[in-house]
Image (cartoon, rainbow, N blue to C red; front, side, top):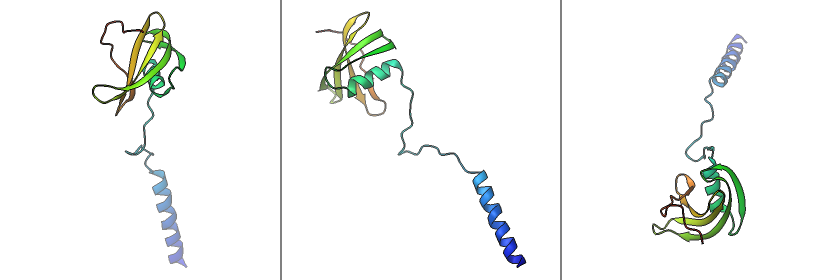
Length: 118
């Protein structure tokens, strides 16, 4: 009987100790870590995922408070999926967002100064 008592106590202590020192759930390589998106990143995600002609207003972007209208999708010269968009804020200009494998949709740098609006 005493042997059974010691076995039960050993099992209880082992269980209690293993739960007390449990490692936190850290993301594995298969889990996506949520990231906080800046207003420009939110705008790029909208441009990349919205249907053509959809509009949305964003605040605190590099264009100030701006209404963005998603344009047509295309493949860049580097074979990267991109999408044009038009920004109406303090300036009215054309921009583009392209899909980066690691970061998702990002705003493409402007190569023609203030952008080109059609």
